[in-house]
Length: 181
Image 1 (cartoon, rainbow, N blue to C red):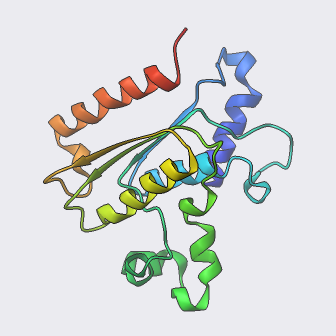
Image 2 (tube, rainbow, N blue to C red):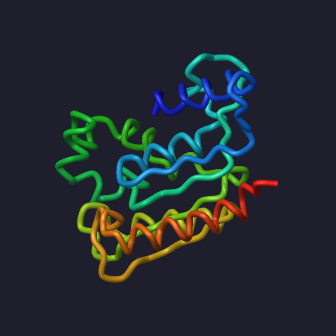
């Protein structure tokens, strides 16, 4: 996540040199990339993740999550072998770390609009993860669009037609939330 924050910082610090409109930044990711996009997008104001400690804002205008894990504290996530390897210790030994890297814990009403894609037969990241995120974003007042895709597993967007579907709805989402003027 620090690398994503460094990239946002670099874009904003060098925007004049490269004619970058920093009011039109979106973060997009699938699986772990979705997790990282959400973490960076939702923790924009967290001093804990301010890489350089300066006043440049890490705010972005949109987040697109394709089947990213949202909450490491759920029973499914806590017991998943990949999650345990990632953190190096079981949940019971470091619950605050599992919580610290759960995007859901950073959601606030001023977060960027979010587009979520999730296959309902995903056995790596259960659909309940995205369901929970979408419900929480709605309750918090963050604009959210959700596409639950029947019959599709994890990494569903490698299939050409699903990829086209996702791209079509991403373009519509960006037109709505990041107008080109």
